[in-house]
Figure 1 (tube, one colour):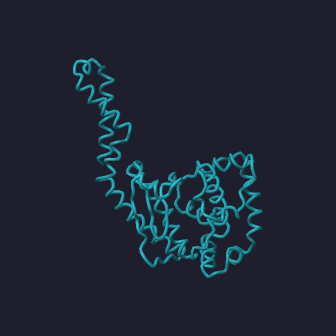
Figure 2: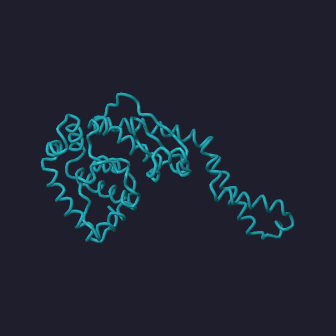
Figure 3: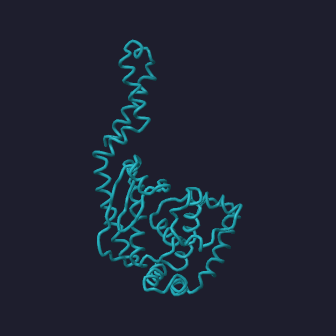
Length: 273
């Protein structure tokens, strides 16, 4: 890719200069100036922006479409997801993305109104796994939104999205562990609404606790329980009624058990899920 080629070119020129010394640069000042500019541009990631606007952007779009189709097929099997219309993919630069999501521009992608909006960050062209996780996470939101008729509490939806996307959760687990060493868990009632209003440090705690909670439910009841809960929400049974129908216990009872599990996890000195 163009971004990678130019970045490597800049590094190789720097290494060459360091090995041979700067005598040749002093003898040819114009060449030295050009090399310095190349290094500065590479370090500033200017070439990354150029790449995103050409071949890299096309590659990201194509891979995203493939990941979306793959994820939709998997969610159809696991959760019974039957989309009425295709989910739209939108790619925007960082400035456009910040204007769309405001203070939550730390999030790499968002789902709203059957559209996944992705910020075109340089790392997306370098990491296929990162892009795939983003698509899986946001497509899960689309599935939950449809199946539950937009009635799913945020903690459940975000926890399930994190679980479904895969990958490690070290930053979230450490944020949650640090938080719980000094405070009690956040109540699930406080985590019912969208996390969009949270600043990044508290959002990491909210996401981490939500992931821990949903992981606990999946371990005990499998995805069949998850599917039943979402369907019950979509049928209008309400959060408490749907929870009892799917998991055979009251939500308050689960929250008490979750508090004990979180305390044991924290006291055990573990900082990873």
